[in-house]
Image 1 (cartoon, rainbow, N blue to C red):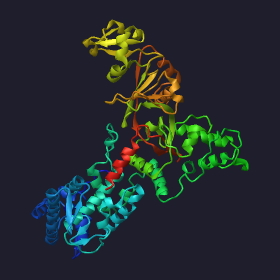
Image 2: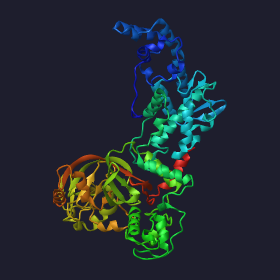
Image 3: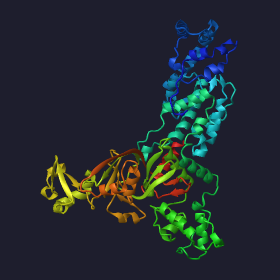
Image 4: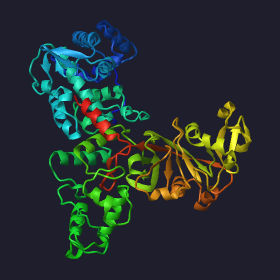
Length: 599
């Protein structure tokens, strides 16, 4: 069962009636009544014990079997059980209402990390207590201790989860002042679950446009509720992010780094630096052995100083994945990156901090990204499409300039526009076009139309210096010179961001490709159209013809999730660790916010 699905169950009366054999015992296991009952039992549970008698009488009147009714003795047991059940729950909620941000326990004040989530849990699930029975601490507290102890593996500090208090608690021991203890234990569990599922930092602090929905507070409460019912509160938390191989790979590498273990050879900082000598395929040089060490490529034929084809392929792959000119020549920027340089548009060693904040970014994504999806990793200057763990399409891309950044957000790709026209956005009109129109509007005739109120005219027919000019839009006709090229891919959004072709093919040879006004330009858009439409009756010939028309043509495509993300350290499906330059300067901002949230 999905741990994030809502758990519902029948009332405690129906539950106990079906389990009638349990009531033949003279003693009732109080822990089972109070702490192992289904989480939503009070959804149907009347607060007044007398109502239980009425409910059972109605069951009998409706033809219930003898096993579905209770004796007077059984009713008495439930009546006694209900008193602490309701009074304890009310006491918990009242405590949160009186002081919703902190609780006092044995003379010390403990801030609550998630008071709203905590209150929602007790209001929805209506448990009397989760961690205590009467004044005794239950064994499940030990499970919480283990979860907290393992939190550093996910770059989460135990102190955030009241570890100083919880580690000193003993299961089975008696404690007074149970209410604050109960609240602190539940706060620790729900906070840890939320941190793993959604991250510590609000993603909108570094990416204001981010719109992916996290796991709800109600679903996190359900996770604990189901753990109480099943008797296992650990598995649900331990399996968060289990289905995300990227997260698991970064987590493994993070733990290797903080454990002082050597990472992959590609990112080893223990090898000697490459000297300032240009290395080319086919040459012999002692520095080639250092290059092999850095890329983890053993010598074939026993000559570590020979730059062979296998090593050349590894260098090309490294250059392509790090936004460098892919020529197999090790010099300049390539040498700097391999030596641990940190230049814009390049790569750097995957430090613990880099792994930590990129694990955080992965926690912002849905638990299930979909079987097929498009991934736009802004710092990498690449766009890829995945089916399962297989990359079915990838291309170089041009992203937004530093003053017109491509936003990070999620959506669904829905349309392809063949031979598109281009309506100049207001921001570009104001910053780039209006002065040119005022000085030489005739230069726009032929390839552009001026449009107002449905009327289409030549740009030279408009007085662009008049106040009325603000009502005109400028639209570029389809064609080889169109700014969008021959095709665009739409996922309608308020940011007016989409993927498209470009006539400026030379830009893809640059290593730093933060060059657009925000939209994402593709080097191989026709191939992308073929991948999206190959099962929709569109042949390659039909696509090519549609991309070279004089009128634009809209085509619906199967809705495909698309994620525009900002990852500076990540792994590919084959396990290779990749890094990219922090082109918008967001890493340090997130790092400071992350460390602040750890407290």
